Length: 366
Image 1: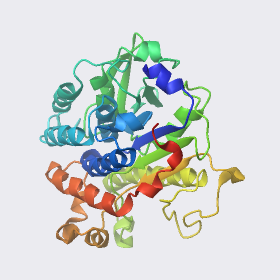
Image 2: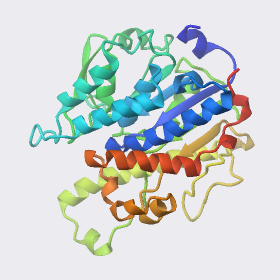
Image 3: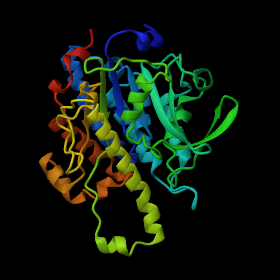
Image 4: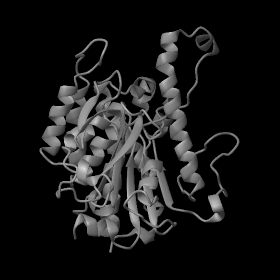
């Protein structure tokens, strides 16, 4: 079956969405290993890879790296090994003072080792792929997709996949922007996380269902499944004295994080509002988990969200008391020394959170 046939065929569709989060992508890799094992057992297919199950895999920033690897048919274990190598190389040294903290060339070399000369439209991609990037010179969010019927597919398909993913990971201050040739015009791209789509699940729902995009997948609880994987979260709390005495530089560092956090929870609220999720999170003290709240009264999708709390108590409950004292340090997006610990947290959290019963039978493979 060709990619176009798969993407346009009738039947329920399955989407995998992967958050940004720097080196904390290792945490998501731990979840993916567990989910792949669960699906292999459920489908009685020992060789199943996530590209066999999910019809569209999308990611932002570090999530785009993992999404790309899965889309070309790598196993979760293979993606994990490649991701650990890339993470250690990417966050190793400072290159350009006052421009970027880390060496973007190291990222390029690692991405080339994974994706080679594949393009966004390469026939080796086994499933739908969406890489979310931000075009800085126009301020627009670009969900770059490999659907052959996409409006911009002729211009975007020849782009090297490694460059497209590098564009999505070019976090301002961490790496220099990536310049891409888009249909004969140059565009400057930065991390897709500098938008409402660092958690890309809602963006992927829109890509899959809006008429302007080529997928046109029907909505419904038995027709559309989104599995969304985070890269860690924690309760935001600052001392009042520090806020009152905050300098301009402190605010400059804090505000982007606050906005990204708000965007993530807004996405979470809306997707829970559109579904009856068995993994619903408590949004806040007023709306809670939105139990009984379904927009229009009819669920538009089945929705699963998995994420691990990087807090001392949560780590103890996962059976990782030795990491409890390091909870705050583990939140840092660029500390490659944490990569193995984050992977272990993802595996432990998945064992606690991910269950076979979460996946509706309507989405079983034939």
